[in-house]
Structure formats: C-alpha cells, structure tokens
Amino acid sequence: MNKSQNTYYGTWWIPTKDNCQKQEFNGVLSYCGDDTPVLILYGVGFCTHFPRSFDTIHGKTYEGLLLSLFNVQEFNYMDSGESRLKAQFILEGEHIDSLEAPAYEQCVIKYPNLREWAFLQRVDISMDEKNREVLSLDIESKGCLVDFELEDDLQFTVLGQMSDHFSRYDISIEQNTILKISAGKKKCVSSFLHICSEFSNFLSLALFSGQYPNELLFMNRDDRCVKLHYKVKPSAKHVGGSIIKYEKLKERLPIILSNWHKDYSKISPIIGHLVNSFSRENEFEPTDFLIIMQAMEGYHKRFRNKNDGKDVRKFEDEINLLLEHFKDVEMLKEIDIDPHKIRITRDFYTHLYMGDEEPDIITNYEELFWLTQQCKILLVCCMLDYMGMTTEEINESCNNSPLSFVIHTIQQKKQSLE
Image 1 (cartoon, rainbow, N blue to C red):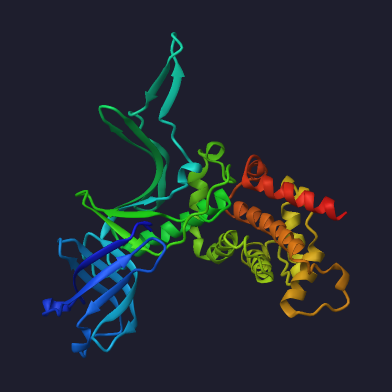
Image 2 (cartoon, rainbow, N blue to C red):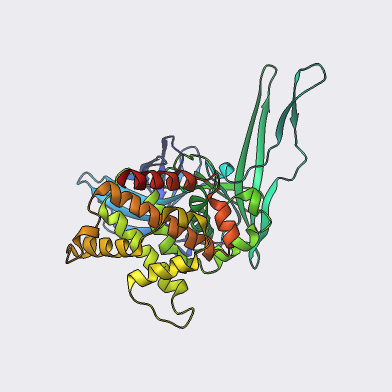
C-alpha cells in the first residue's frame, strides 16, 4: 500500500502452541504497495518439517521491529536451502496469531481521494483593510464529517484532519479526510477489513472510479499503533465531482451508509462487477459488457423480482421493469436505453449466434462500449436506490458529477450515428 520499497532483515519463525521451542530462520522481507510481499528464508532445506504453506509467520528485524505475516505460500524452493514465500498480509509493529483473533479497538483507514468526497475546509484566505492576504486556520473544530453507530458497539466516523509544520522560514499545512472505525471491545483485523472493503466500494461508486485505501492503522486505548500492508490496486485519479454528494446528503448519510452495510453480502458481487469495470475502460472487451449484464440481472433477481408477486425470468422484461421503476430519473431519459437491443446483443456475445435479429445486434466495439456505459448508468441508479436514495436525490446525483460527462458523450455518439 506504501509505494516505497521496504526491506527488512531479521529472523523468522512459525508461532508454536504451549510455548514450545521455536525454530528460527534468517531471512529478508521485501514489499512495495503494488507488489505481493516476498519473504526469502535461508537454511530451510535443513529442516524436513518446514511446511509449504501456513497461516502465520512471525518475524523480528535486527533493529527490533516485530512483524506478523499471514496467508503465506511458498512459490520457489532452491536446493541450496533458500525458500521464497509470498504473504498476503503484513502486520508491522506487533505479533498476533491470526487475522481472526480479537486484537484491536480502532482502525484508521486513509484514502488518497477521500477528501474529494467529503472535506472540512480549515484554511481560509481573505483580504484585510490594507488589501493584504490574511491566512486563517480553524484548529478548534472537532472535524467530524460523518459520525454514527454502524452497528451495535461499532462507531463509524469520517474526520477532517489537518497537519501543520512551522519553521523559522516556512509554514506547511496539509488537509485530509480519514475514516475511523471504533469498537467498544477488541475486534479481529478481518472484521475491520470487511468494513474497509464495503466503504471502498461505496467511495468508488461516489466518485465513479476505483478507490482503494493507501494506509490502514490499528490501535487500542494505549495509543500504540500498528500498520497493515497488503497488495492493493492504486486508486484512480479523480476527475471531479461526486455522484453521492456529501454536502447535499450529509444529514441522511448515516441512514444511507447503514443501508449499504446492512445486507452488504447480497449487493457485494454486483457492486464488485461495477467497480471492477471502472478500471477496464482502457482495455474494453465484449466480456466487460457481459459482466455488466450479469450484474444488472443479478440486481433484479435479488432485489426487484417478485416485489409485485410476479416472477419475471426473461432478461428483456427485467430491464423493462428496472426502467419502469426509474421512470422519473432524468439521466435515464436522456440516454434512452433500448432493452431489446441490449438483450439481443447480450444473447449474441453469450451464445455467439445471431439468429434472425442480426441487423439490431451491436458488433462494433466502440458502439458496444457506449452501450455498456448506458447499462452502467442504470446499474448506478440501482445502487443508489438500494441505499434508500429518493428519485429526487438520484436526479441530483447526476449534476456536476462524473455521470454528466458520460451522458453527454453518449448523446453525442447517438447523434453522430443518426
């Protein structure tokens, strides 16, 4: 998650039960934010009982730093006794035996673009009576942008944060936004990671681009802080604007985020397909179109089907019902979705058979890309509806947001084809 290269030399061992004697190996751990952490152990060939994969490895650098590695898998072994292993997670600063063991009361999650969604302006520049610039700092505000109980004994807080550095010659001020999850009693790392994944997809939807954490910190009441590292995608550069507008919805955000969290396991694969599609726009293929089709069908079957007592099974009818549900959403009127064209195009790329409806099938990749964008906008409406946003709020989401550009481009493409 940290883009800088980290290399640690030290001794490493497998945690043992009942304080049994541990066997230590010399080795070196290296990792960078965009790469899988790699541990090289020396002298393993002399130990016939060394496993090929295991849940946890503990280490201590020669400088005394404690490290815990989780979900470790050997991927290269040499006859010289050197073993190379990949670790999915690294906890820097403490030894714990499992990601499932209750260990921490707080988790602070940082995103490079979270402040693009919610931001507390603490710095103000104005002019005085002599036309001189005056810099004002708000250092008293608590900085809570969102603060509510996500579930029993679990507090969800989005904070505006400011750090400053004053010297004789310079003043440096950095403003940022962080997410803090606080529990009344210790929780396991994996439970915090689950909430992190939920919010990452929420933020990705809000900014209409893939957003991932760049730092996770865990702590208890003694303020001792440890850091978790794992391979994560870099966040996409934010273009501007937000679909889920903080300023417009800040009073309703506790309800919206609670709805997102409540049955997240049901919506997770659908929003997962949508968020993954954000990073595929520069390498679009027909399978990307089919994945969005699968997500739309999944949403209808999980959340809309049988609401009126009818069991709708035909894909084209499902799209028509979704459009009927969102009949007052202006952005869908502007892009004029054709359910029939979507259905026969999906059938063609699914079965590779045109049948008697060949003239209406989209085979041009550029046209297929923009048809996919239309469907993604419909899927965004589904996500916003799932959170409990009203039609008025969904209509507002399009204004000055990344969707505005997409809709404008779709309209231009349609006019050029007419």
